[in-house]
Image (tube, rainbow, N blue to C red; front, side, top):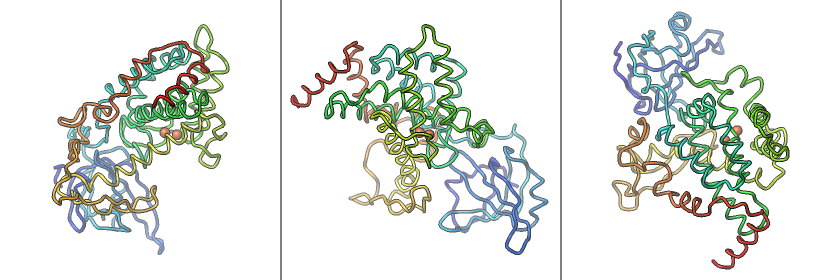
Length: 394
Ligand SMILES: [Fe+2]
Ligand SMILES: [Fe+2]
C-alpha cells in the first residue's frame, strides 16, 4: 500500500484513499444481522474520520492496535453528512517511518509563546499579591507547566489539539479581563478581575490528568473515575497546602468554587452552580470560547484554500446544526487580513504572515493597558469608586 500522506481534511467524497493514519479508536461491533464489523477512528493533524470494515473484520482487527500507525486502502463516501471510509485493507506501519507532527493536531501558536503570554497577563493584570503568588506557584512548577502546555482542552468538540488547553485558557483570560473591567464599570465592586483571571487559569487544569495525549486523545482512568472538575479542585488544595506562609483560606475557597462551578449546571458535571459574580462570568467565558472554536472548526474550511466561497458547513452535532459563512461580497477571495490556509493554520509554531500571537491585531492593546494600570493595593471599594468615575468620564 502507498505510504504517501493524504490528509483527512483533503479527502473527497466518492474517491479511493491510500494513506497512513494514526489509529485512534477501534472496536468490533455487530450488524443487525449479527455479523461482526470493524469500527475505527483514524486521525491525523487535520482531523479524524470514521472507518468501517464490513468484510474480513476479525482478520483486519488483529493487524493493529490503538495508537499504532496504519497504512490503509479504502473508499471515501458520505454518510449522514460526514465523510467515512469503507476499509479494504490495512497494515501496521513502523513508528520510525512517520513524522509525528503529521498525525497530532496542535495549536497554531507555539505552546511556549502562549504560556509566556499567559504568565505576562497574570503578572501585569493581577493586583492581589496573594492571587499572583498562588498562580505563580502553580505555573512555576516545571512538571505541571510541561503538561499544561501540551494538553488538549477536550477529546472532541473544541480545542482538541496539543496546546489546546493553553490556547483556550489564554483566550478566556484576555476576554475575562475585558469582561471583568466592563462590569466593574457598570456594577462597581461586584466583580474582582483577579478572581476571574485566576478562575480561568485553573478551571480546566484537571484535564492534564483527565486526558491522555501522548498519541491519540482519550480519557485516562483517573479522568473517567474522578474527572477534571474534582481533580482541579484537589490541585487547588494541594498547591495551597504547600505554600508558606499559608494562603488566605477564604481565597482558597473562592478558587475551589470557581473550578467546581465552571460547567454551570449539575447535569453538566459541576457539583455546585456558580454562586459568585466571578464564577458566573467564568462559566459563560468557557461557553463562548468553546463555542467559537467549534464555530471556527465548522467555518474555516469554507474560508480557506480553493473553497473560499462560503456557504454551509457540514452538520455539527455539538452545535446542533449546520453553520453558515456568508459568501464574500465581491466574489472570489475573502479579503480579510489574517486568513490563513488550512495547512499553514495547522503548522507548527508561528505562521508566517499570520498574527505573531493571538493578541496581535486582535486584542493587543489589553496587555499595555494592563501594565499601565500597575499593581496598586487599592481596596476593592476604592477601585469601584474609580471605575464609577470612568463610567461618567466616557
Ligand atoms: Fe471544563
Ligand atoms: Fe474550558
